[in-house]
Image 1 (tube, rainbow, N blue to C red):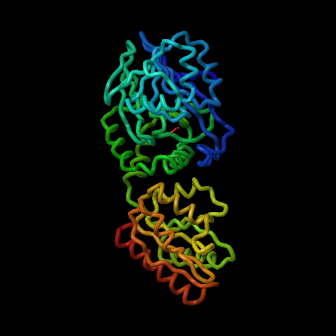
Image 2 (cartoon, protein in one colour):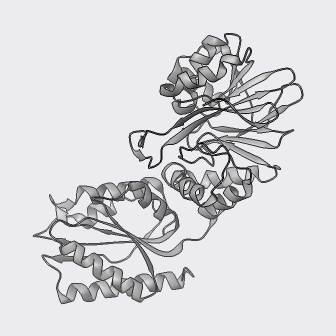
Image 3 (cartoon, rainbow, N blue to C red):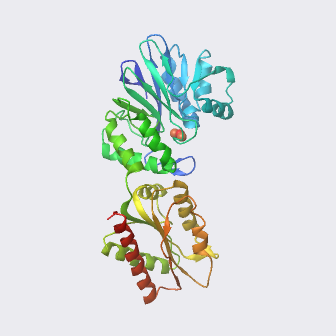
Length: 392
Ligand code: FEO
């Protein structure tokens, strides 16, 4: 695709990746993604903001064919999907300097083997004049690496945000045209990549609050001409109270655990509690991550196998712990054959979660009447906790 104009002398460059279905070898990309770079031509200096993933380098380099001079390459984030083509850009523009945070400089040297002398590091709030346009660099650490920053173009009121407010969507629409579609993709992006850093994301949102934003231009996905839409969504995901929802990832081998899960789902619904159910043998892990953003309670359903939780249940639990959702309660249900340490193993896997454990329900073999009664009690306990905390 050719460069696309955002405003006078401000262009989107980069690549729309229609084909990729997995990011970082772990994150599903149901509809591909894009790698966004931006060219800003001031009256005196020209800047390229970020680059593209190295497999897409040819596309960016061909977009730069008509650009005779680049004075600065701003690297807002050292991860290679944004920085990986900097070496090629510097080959074409050997006089260009790389602008980054001090921390990013070290990481870019480690990752790309760039030389020390090409860097200009910027402090938080430092500005750079391009003549009639001014860039302000705002350190925004842990979005989602420690070195990240965003860049505000003062005269045009555009925030270039790299991964912040990103979404994995491949589309030819430069600007957001379907907010519902982008909400879904941005929520998935937040859940999978940014939620573990919810505390600092909140501080970064506060830091951006005083800025007058007319456009947000992220490093993945479409450009926001209505920044309020995505800012409001982020405020809800980071600051909003948990909702009256149980997220129930489960796996079953011989149907006993499945029978327990089905009974618990019905009992919870009867008590007025929403449930989002995920069969871990077939689920899209991104959907599970999204559901975890809002859930007040997590219940893991697993049979005991090899003396502990099923490996899929262990993976789902590991993921929940790593993503650090705002859930307040957790429980475990499942069937076992003769023994094991399923509850102890799973309980030991969630040190990051600030949750109260509600009494698990395990049964030997197929569930009995007593098992179903215990599951009814679990549903009552969860509903009660949700009421006490005003989640219902
Ligand atoms: Fe899109 Fe953290 O890279």
